[in-house]
Image (cartoon, rainbow over all chains, first blue to last red; front, side, top):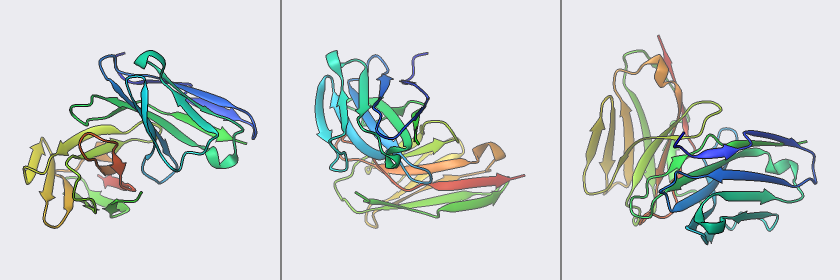
Length: 113
Length: 111
């Protein structure tokens, strides 16, 4: 499979626990984005990387959220001390810096009880 | 962050009809306007995209119409099929920056 891969697809956790999501990009893509999507809404930008550099973070992203992209390949998104309001689909998208086209993974659905 | 407004919120079309979804944007610096299709439980998939140097782009049954002066663009689905039933999102970006998405239109095509 040469598409964007996300893991896990579903995660159920209790409030206060930490969770981590992983995204494996399309190999030749140098940009990687994280979006959050709640039911009935469009994807909301969280942060993005160009290679290993994190270039932008949304002001909506609380300090409980952290993302990394070591070596410019896969990326992880960690949420610490989860809250019920964190329940959402977390989408990863990748692309190249010359086209603007983004290709999304299937998403990781988080449910915080 | 709501810089792209999408309408209608939902749309019901008969098989064979034309589905039309509209989007309006505020930022005149936007230079890339894609449409995404999303099925339940799946990630958004790029459907068709346009840049402001053309007023229309057609790919199969899907057409984007772009009106730069009105800051609006629309998706037309000709000969709509039940398999087109999904949620459609417009989006916009500037200079290959992050995409800003609309709120989505849920399309239902009935046979």
